[in-house]
Image 1 (cartoon, helix red, strand yellow):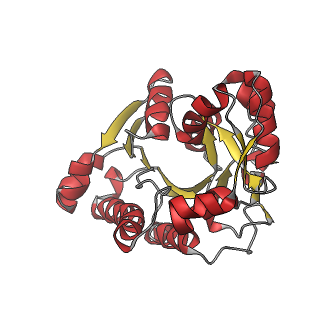
Image 2 (image 1 turned 30 degrees about the horizontal axis):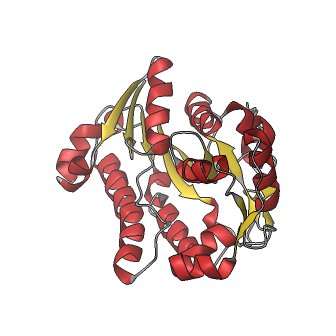
Image 3 (image 1 turned 90 degrees about the horizontal axis):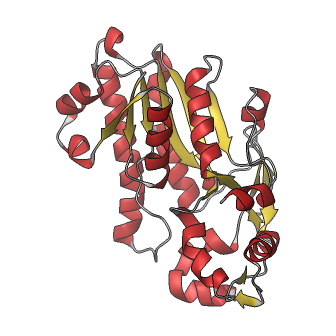
Length: 285
């Protein structure tokens, strides 16, 4: 299949492109230049692609101000809007079979347990971003295109994401829980993210919202314990919540709060995780 990917240079995009190439597909990068060159150009880039995967989005873990909050929002909403418009402008015979669009588990209310049927959604800035992000795909519902919205959790891997940032400190024995440590940590191994996306492409019955998280969320405290044990290093230090608030401001909620999110839709559709629990994920990494 010919598969166009926005955000292909990111942590997930790079790994996914490699997996798809190894599986015999033809991944095509939708660059920032393509996205800024106008809709007519973008329609040509994605013309006759079998699949479009929309992963683009600016990093969210930074101290927020009005400028970067707007960038966090627009990098997701505007990109999705342009891709959807480009799809609609192409003739039906040149439109994709599948459109897979990223979102995040930040859409859910912190401190609660959720699957895809949950209506207990968040009301903070990132939840609002996710709502707006997902809303931009609604015009595809009237077309003969299978739409999958993937709400991605905390992705674990050696080459990117939060674990790459944490590993040096833990290897030095300076790791520890964050805040109370009681907050939920809904993770997924990078390999399972890529496998799940390929599964959604291959299986024609798959559509709707999918939580891309492992089936066994843990707390930050249990994650810290598991990581320190795998590295054979102590993890006696703790990062107080107030210190994170001083560094990141309101964005610190990403680290000191969380929701327990379950991948019910994936499991019900028959997907099986290679790394379903934190110990198997960290063992492989």
